[in-house]
Image (cartoon, rainbow, N blue to C red; front, side, top):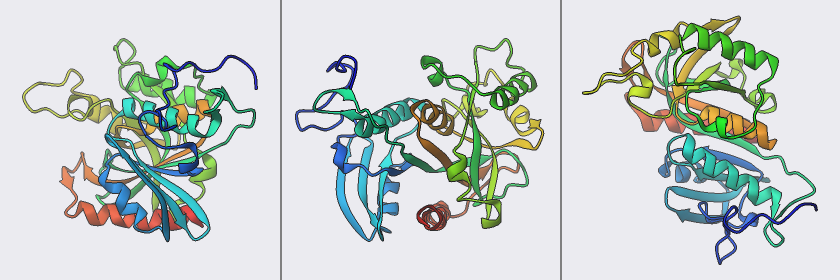
Amino acid sequence: MQGNPIGASELIITDKGCIYHLDVHPEEIANTIITVGDPGRVAMISRYFDRVEHKKEHREFITHTGYIGNKRLSVVSTGIGPDNIDITLNELDALVNVDFATRLPKEDHTTLEIVRMGTSGALQADIAVDSLVVSTFGIGLDNLLHYYHYTENAEVAFIKDAFVKHSRLQTSPIKPYMAEGSIHLLNKFPARAGYIHGITVTCPGFYAPQGRQIRMAPALPHLIDSLSSFRSGDHRITNFEMETSAIYGLGRIMGHHCLSINTIIANRQTKEFTSDGTRSVTQMIEKSLELLIS
């Protein structure tokens, strides 16, 4: 081990030996982790566990860890938005890659598998509600990754630059970033199994950032059309939500395998909304769990 211990104000460990926000001990987290935005969705997933080892709850962060067969899994609720992803991924990484006794990074890096199971809105008319979308890339319209040292590879930078030009964001205060999902995990959820592959855009809010107007007009009224009409080779934007790009970007920096799966509950082109969101989410969980642990 090298370097100075991480300061108490930088890595906050409670008097019970838990990480600050998630409120779990290092031994209470598995190396395969499912993240969900909705705290209520944690129990929807853990009910498929053969046995549950740990249940912890603090603020919007609920963690259940257990087994399906011999596979150890954790389910963690993140709450909504890139800011909560910043908390969740940093604390998950610290739980496995920092020695809490010495406050030093461990010499041997642990790579986590982090799979988001969420809900999302489709941006293409041909993507029906209740479909399952797997994100090949995440484009962030938030600013989270600008606070980290992150470099896009040549392919990612090419697609991102084409997106910025297409969406007329060159002179906008919005500075998109883009990150790639894990090929290792993506291969578990192929198109032949019923998963639609495409780019997911992550927005920092639900209303104007996603083109919605209630009383206040959005400053980017062209946003939805520019997202749905973007193409770069075989790549198109399939959907948008509020977490994927942050997970992908931080996961790349930290050296973890990350993938985002979303059930489509709304189609912003056809204006349709799912008739049974609970059933749609349940089907995503059942199908995706089977493939994840196979």
